[in-house]
Amino acid sequence: MSDSVASAPATGFMGVRLHINVDHVATLRNARGTPYPDPTAAALECLNAGADGITAHLREDRRHIVDADIESLRAAVLAARRTFNLEMAATDEMVGLALRVRPDVCTIVPERRQERTTEGGLDVVGGATDLARRVRELASAKIKVSLFVAADARQIDESRAIGAAQVELHTGEYAEGHPGELAKLTEGAVRALGHGLEVAAGHGLTRGNVGAIAAIPGIVELNIGHAVVSDAVFLGMRGAVRAYRSAMGTQGARG
Image 1 (cartoon, rainbow, N blue to C red):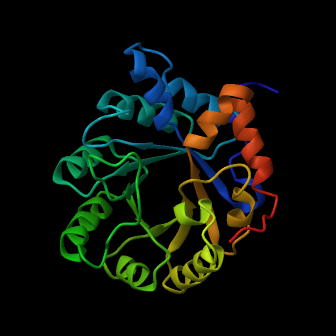
Image 2: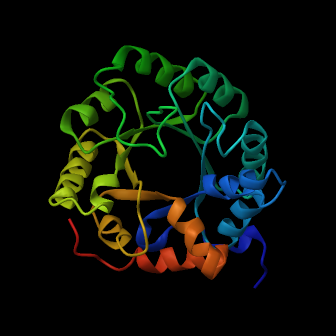
């Protein structure tokens, strides 16, 4: 079998799509100011191993992914006929960039300069007016809009009300072992599906905890980044992606 991207499977394990976030390949590159490792090269390795799509977060402070990465990733993923998901804050700058680059999906996330990583879900209820305007701008350009939210009924309801096509449920508290989180995520998925929203999930997922999330009925996509890049140190990028494919079929017990 050829090693070309086109030879890799086009659908996720057990029907759940696996998107790999390559932000922390850029973190490693930027630590020394070198041109390597290249996030686009990493993305192609992931796609060759069977990932369904690539995710990258262009932060306001450009602490890892930079504008040139977004251009390169978009071109590479488009050529591979897979999905490119741009994570971004709800700002005029980011909407303008998205309208120019035309990712397949824009996932709007909360962002604060001082945070180490995204710390919670988007406050859709509190920011509904501005968010609705930006969702309309992106959707009018035929870009699928996803909102990164907690598994909270009000946030999910408002996501549908302002026109999102998808919600990505924040799994951070589940990943930290908080009791009851798996049940909340399951309830959130049911509520989102009832509104006709597509349901994704992500944040803090590892090989050890991803199985139970992949098994939640209605979740069709997982976004995983830091843990995949970390595991790639020992397994290689392709090996890490394949390991997560396998783990997604193992139902866990945490929650």
